[in-house]
Length: 92
Image 1 (cartoon, rainbow, N blue to C red):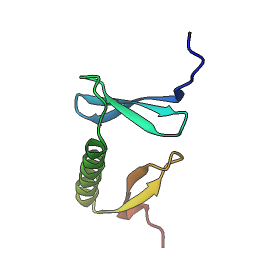
Image 2 (image 1 turned 60 degrees about the horizontal axis):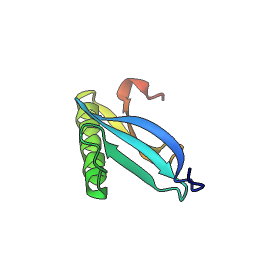
Image 3 (image 1 turned 90 degrees about the horizontal axis):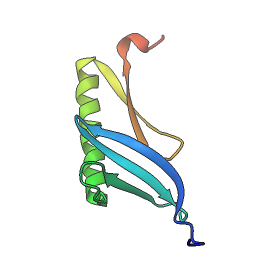
Image 4 (image 1 turned 90 degrees about the vertical axis):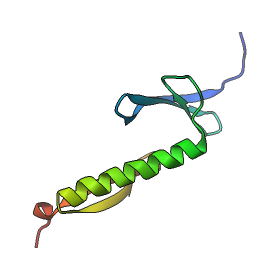
């Protein structure tokens, strides 16, 4: 048995799009490694960048349909989170 520790935290499954998931872990150095669940391959930084772009585009379209305002936030992990504030949610 090895005395080395590689994984600090297992974040778990993350939905990417219909039928596609990633599995994320955090290394002892704080690096997040994402695996494509269907292949087991490590997702590249380019894959993650493209996924973030697709997520934002989807949220923009959804928000536009709702006639709302797209709001950008960061979650506790420092990752981008997009939400839509509909015009009905605004208070004078």
